[in-house]
Structures are given as structure tokens and as C-alpha cells.
View (cartoon, rainbow, N blue to C red):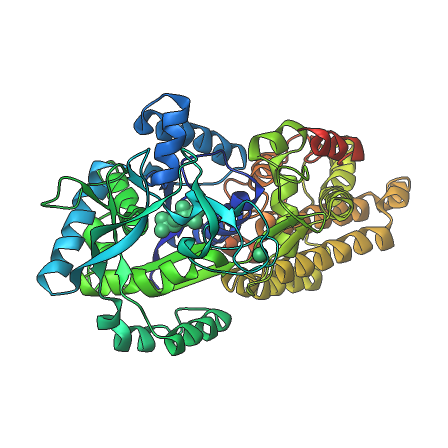
Length: 546
Ligand code: 2FM
Ligand code: ZN
């Protein structure tokens, strides 16, 4: 079978703040999948970038007294730093505020306009008469119309959970100026989502989505699709709508187009990649979007409709994940459970988080908790106690008694074959995003390898001059099994795998290498510890950082 061509994206983080562990959960889930695909010999490209447009970014730039361009570039650099820190193997981290994105957004909009998929309608909207700008719901606060709780957002009450529109709020005021908002008319552009109802009903039921998502969409179909407001009035940080001087594309129109733009930007420096081959209507390449559950509507309804109507291919699949909680609590600044990527890296290695998340991630859209006690236990027991231990206990003897060379035999070929066969099931788990199941299977193999060594007792054999070759064979077998585990854990633990490959002197391991043992007499290099135990003090220091 010829290798698959895949393009993978992760939802573009907003360019108004640093990455936190919530972003990292999704990015790591995606990265593990991408690394797994590459190990299968598939061509897999992973792009992402900053979601740079919108009112909050414009306001934050104003507050910081810099241009939105400067702000988003600063934030983008910090994201790139964090992404590298967590060993995320991205091919490109671009921005939605780019020339590629502007060209594509205008082209897509114009194609829809020509096909009658865009209409204009006058709407009434809250307006700040002092700041002279229209106010998004989030910038209006007031008393809840249901329970009277003070200081609630314009769209929902955090006390009683009511949802409403800003006009329902009592004593509304603009968070920008404190002024009471007035209502003002404005002419907006709408994308006629209803034109795509038939297409979407078929598309959302054709295996591109997890079942839970399809069911959610059925609810939205029953409630009735609504035309989508894709314009925003000046002042706004975004792209001007063609032919307009004061109206911009709503950031959620150009955000997913940012996936295409990031890829296009990459193609300019990668002659092996062709934009058209991936995005043309008849493309045979595969396109995957990883997203969080709060943005399903945008990705599973608007986005396929936008692509379909503009003559582009639609996604092969959209993979949705749940939210992250820390010690059972929603991440929040005030509770001290809001952990930034950079804070984590000051205290703990990136692979501790990668491994822990892998033990928790499945294909269902469930929230995922970092319970730190469990976190410490998983790393110390699985990664250090089981996996790395196999190499350290075997390497010691091979180094001191056998000149770093493996024996001529595979002592237990059945055990080796069982390990290789398990690799097929593990691959199936990775492919279907069942990482927790993959980790369980891998750790069961690690247990078997340790049990094998325990039963063979090479530390006794080595003392018996007549059993030297047996001791050699047993320890070499330990190394062969360890190498299989390195292959299986490599998508999750890329740095440990790289150091293990150096120790094994085996080059970059691919998935298929699981079937062939290292050759007889193969020479290793000196073993150096591959992972450190997590000390609870490191976790305390992280939690105490404010
Ligand atoms: O929800 C968010 O964080 C958005 N910035 C995600 C955008 S995803 C894509 F459409 F760009
Ligand atoms: Zn309320």
C-alpha cells in the first residue's frame, strides 16, 4: 500500500495570551497522532498558528499601548517557544493575520457571494456611545434578568446559568467605558448556512465525526439552522471585506481558513508539498482537524459548508476532545489551578505531561483530569519503574561482562513475536485515538519483560562461570523487548525514544522495526538514565507558583 498523505491541524489558539495546559492537552493529543502516522511511513504534515483577529485582541493591544500586529507577533513567539518545549512536532505555526489568509479569505468570500450564499441584513446591536463602537456580548455587564446577580456577562449568568441577550440585562454597562450601551443599527453580511442544510445533513452523518458529535448536530438541525453573521464593524482587528471600508470579516470566518493559509505558507518553502494536491475538490489526501468540544459548531457546520460552497475539499474527519481539569477543578486563575505551559516546564519535564495525558486520552469526548497524585504515580511507576528499568537492569550486565555487545541468539523468540503482535493492536489504538488503551497494552508488555528478567535471574547466572552465555542471552532478550517498547512509546515520549535510539545504536525507529530484532552481536553504547522520577516537591513547587 502506498503511504497515506495526511494534513493535520490543531485549533488555532487566540493570540491574546500564553498557552496553558488546556491548549497543551489538545496539541499533545494531535502530536502523538502525527508522530504515530510518521512512524507508519505515512506523509503527515501538522500545521497550526495563532488566531490573531477579533475585538479582545484589539482591546488588549490598546491597553498595552502596542499595535495588534506587534501584540500578536509577541504572543506567537511565546506560543512557538512553548510548543517546542513540549516537543510538539509542528511543521508550521503561522498566524491568521497573514497575506495568505487574506487572499484565501477574500477568494472564498467572493466565490460564495457569486453563488448567492451571502446576504446583507440590518441588525440592531449594542453600541458604546463613548467609545464609539459596537459591543460584543462579552463586553457588556449588568444584573442577571432572572436572578438579579450583579456584574454578569451579556450572554449568560454565572450564578444561575441563565442565557440571554445583552438587551435583557438590567443596568447594562460597557466594560470599556462604563457607559450605558445604546442600540444602533448596522448592515451586516450573513452566510446562508441554510443553503447547505441538505449537504450538511449528509456530511455530518457520513463518518467524518464521532458519534457524540453527530448526535449534538442532530439537535442543532432540529432547532433549525440560522444564517451566520460573518461581518463586524470598525473598529476591529481583522481583514476588510472586499469593497468595504469599515466592515471586517468576523474572526471566526477567517480562523479556519487560517489552516489553509498556514499550509500554503509552508508549501512556499517545502517543494515536496502542493497546496492544490491537498485542498482541491478531488484531493486524495486526508485532512484532519483536532478541536475542543466548545468549537464543534464552527468546525462541523460552518467550516464544511464554507469549503463545499467555495469549491474546496471537505475534512476527512474532525476529532473533538473534552476539557482539562486540574485536581478535579476547572482551570481558573483565582483558584490557582490555571497552569501555563511555561510554568509547567520550569518544574517538570514535558514528557511527564505527554505520558500522563496519553494514559487518560480516549476517542470519547470526555473531560480529562490531571490528578497530581496519580500523575506522580504514573510517571514513577510506569515510565521509570517499568519501562526504563528493563534497559537499565539489562544494560548493566551487557556493559560490564559482554563489551556492550548483544548475544547471538534471541533467547525467547515466542516472547519477541508476542511483543511484535501486540504492536498491531497498539497501532490500532493509536490510529483510533485510544491512547489510554495503547498505554495499558504497552505497560502490560513492560510487565512481561520485567517478569521474564525476574524469572531468569541474570544476576545469579552471571556468577556461575558455566552460565555466562545464558546470562548474556537473557540480558540481550531484555534489550530486544525494551526496543519494541521504545517503538511503541515513541509517539508519546519522543525525547526519551531519541536517547534510547542512541543507546541502542539503531537509528530512527519506525513502527515496522518491531518485527525484526537487533542483529546478533549488535553493539550498544553506554547506558545513561533515560528518565527521572518525579519528586512530589516538584509538583508542589508548580502548584505554588502564582
Ligand atoms: O476557540 C478558540 O480558541 C479559537 N481561537 C479556535 C480557532 S480554530 C480555527 F478555526 F482556527
Ligand atoms: Zn442569574
